[in-house]
Image (tube, rainbow over all chains, first blue to last red; front, side):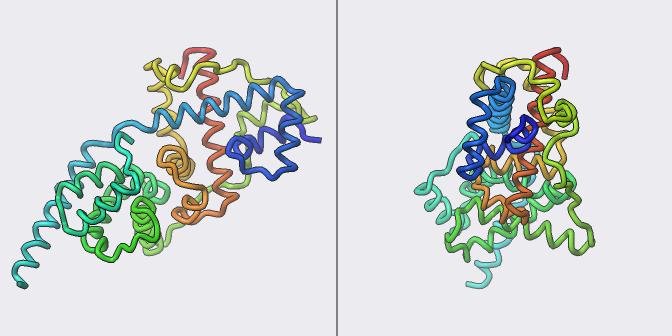
Length: 86
Length: 206
């Protein structure tokens, strides 16, 4: 029988739909009977959503600026090389 | 990401990149660099990871001519970064040290008794949506702090899977980890975020 600790160990696999049919069913059965595990799964899912929403922020502008500069330089030298070869 | 490249837009972006269009490169740099950095941070420290991402973009100027579109542009770029990082690690003979042995965070594991039942069950229920919770600036700052404190391997796996929406299979290929190891990385990172949010909600402390 699946215990609370076992469920906590495979909670992410359950949330992401990565469990096989039998394991998935055992989790569902356990969740029907255990309010604490329902809370845990709900909270873990909410934390995942929170992380997802939070991580979609702006990129590091300083790094972007440095990459833009290096790319512009490299494009310029490639174009100069191409026109010399024409 | 504030811009999302759909498949049609991606085809025209690739054409522009192949023509060496500088504004297309600017757009691609903004769109794809955060994910490339997440890949590089899986293997390397912060400043080496930033260097690798810069070097990769310079490589891409020529390499894009041979891009055949067998995978998406994002996956292709992420693989270039991963390969370069692996080469760098090989040349310095260092390995990525990651502990895949435990599925549960010690702080969470302690909350079960010997029979495997909760001794200290979750105290609260997060009923609000993620966006509503994030309106609390202090929680957002706390999340920043904890995300940056995650081991790089866990953070990168989480970023690629959640924020950059790669499929598990792609993340495994890019980072060169097994499916079961990826599951451990994701689960450990999520538990840490769960424990942080729970403490924050209960005590207001980060």
